[in-house]
Length: 94
Ligand code: SF4
Image 1 (cartoon, rainbow, N blue to C red):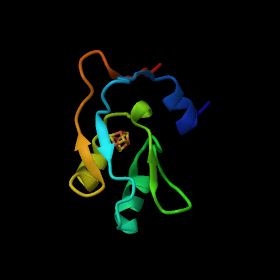
Image 2 (image 1 turned 120 degrees about the horizontal axis):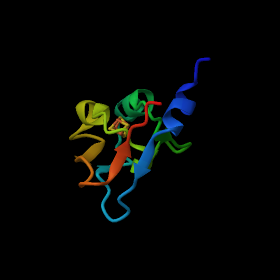
Image 3 (image 1 turned 135 degrees about the vertical axis):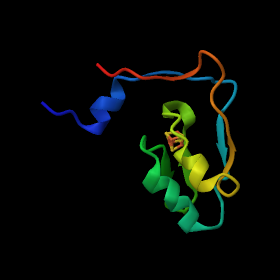
Image 4 (image 1 turned 90 degrees about the vertical axis):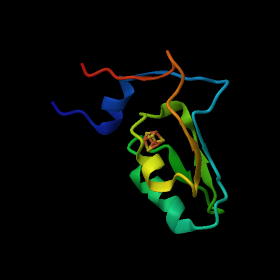
């Protein structure tokens, strides 16, 4: 039996640091093409384009893959750090 991406992601555990967002963005960054890179590339689907072309983003489900850092640090992505010790994703493969 093969599992969907959503089913595979749902077995991971997240220890969300509510005090400190490890990724911060400019949701109203003016270049739509740059924002669409994030919408299309984030493997967890955490970047969503709103009707007014601003971005919604929730770091709580972040897989810490670094894709958004590579694509858009310095444009849409204003800060990218790993979560502090004991916080962030815990991968479950089974
Ligand atoms: S690090 Fe990866 S999973 Fe986390 S927000 Fe960026 S692209 Fe998405």
